[in-house]
Image (cartoon, rainbow, N blue to C red; front, top):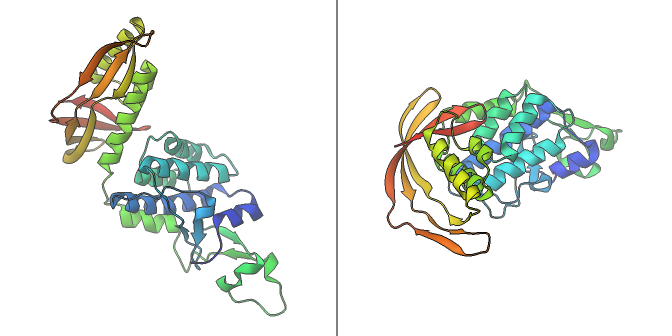
Length: 290
């Protein structure tokens, strides 16, 4: 790994082309997917934390701690801020990461599907001569390193093939849906349930009625709703999956406008459920819960 960082590249160039953003984000997103699958997080995804191999492949360093969703959001933000031309499909893919509507692998797939990928053009500061041989009589300060496609296939395509058979991280998908549901109920916003449920889901109707009752009675939720954990894939057909999950019990209170606790809920035992998810253009959504 060299000393050249993405922050150096952006300091010299300012922004990157959309096809370069595809290569950058896909490479780093697949690295994050591997990290998350191993039960770890990076926790500090930023331009300063991205270094380049001698062949120009971006790598993450300077890790910290945090949530997988934080890693995905920070990587999407990095790609968005470094993007020069706001290519609509790429912006849409990055926005899903910013909104925590996808995991790292799904971010990689949607970004790669947004348009072509091309190797990054790396500026050539004086202190990065170790990346290549200096030509006699010429200053390296004006050179630009261009990765040769004939020598190395575009990074994004290679990585996609390597991960093509890897399943989505269902724990991350469910955790994201749980967070979105909690947010919708705490905010008492029925429209936010679209980030949780398929449009035809009867469970969405039940949560919508719950939110209406909270608004009507001027109550707010404080605490933790039931959470879906330990997913096991039972069946997958096209854009639908069935997961066996363990529902962790809810623990929350309902508080009125005067701060008085009107209801206290303390679940006791986890229970096993079957959750059917459907993949939509905006990510996985709950269809039914049995």
